[in-house]
Length: 505
Image (cartoon, rainbow, N blue to C red):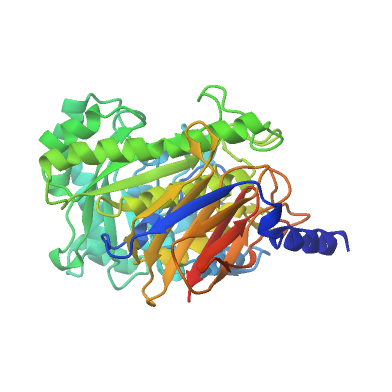
């Protein structure tokens, strides 16, 4: 009964009249200036062997009491299918920098047990390996993004792994794959040439990393008609030297990666995922918006060497990073996910959408039970997070054509506009708007230059750290939302701390 009353109260709050609001933001959508199509791969996912991301999160085994499809959690598979995950990056991350692909093939009972030195020092039994990942990607309908180990293995190993996965020949490696249960070759859409070569991927200097990329990319080949894209390891945060050097000297590749994590404070003292003060709501959103500067400056560097924009920018690790939950295993990076994370997700996706000419992919870190997760699990229980709901709502932007959206209105805090808007023409021909109110305490009326009606969904809550728990898994979920006409213009009454996606009729 209490949950029903809370839902009804929130619905009434969302329906509050514009007269009760104290702020107005004006939005102009210029439909005469269509941009480059938004690549669906900017809504990609990242699944590293870290904590409970793979084991329990994805893989429970065929003999588990948890309902599963050939060992994969049935509830997780269904949830990921629903949001049409475009691609999954695997096996790392730092884990991939010590990963030997041969550890993860053949009978599971005979696979070697290793130590995951990067994440918690726990043992890794390799029961989730190449076949398990590639089949999982197919099961949920996602492209495979495989990160090669250039930190501790030779180019020959990468070449063999790709041949094992993708060859349809009668080679020994292709036949070994067939003996291990997979007759047809898999498609590897993205080939990551290493991971964070500036850090856990080898602590390389930019010049050396560029030479390494030239070398490994030469041998990291799949069948030509597969159309695989090679992604070079680029910069992170405001360290643009790797991007500059890789673009200048890194040889031939199809994409350049950049990594960026949002924290409320500083990396060594990040702050909690819940029960945080408003100052950390504000600092988190401000830091999230900084990714726009990073993308813009990286794109400017890329333009010098690639003016025709043939090389894509891939933000293949991004998201919030807080202090892990008290009582959780050290090194597992398990954190709760609240309405604040939903705002970070929406603001970040809006930025990627505005840079559709250069940003061709992004992978949120991470998919399940790690950092800014889509899904949280506890043995047989599963929770969809507010971030998951944002990705669900944003499906309308997959493959859409963006339009410039200029916003004039108040700031929530210095450097954080109260209202952020992204606009695009969906594949169904409808104009779609994503609207974010960053202010956790005040509503805003968003007045557009559009006419007509609009309907969609909105995500909000009473508390800044409103979240879903295993005891209350639907505390934060999207509700129906629509616009109204004010003086002949389409407008939206956005409650505090809310994200809405609507289609204009």
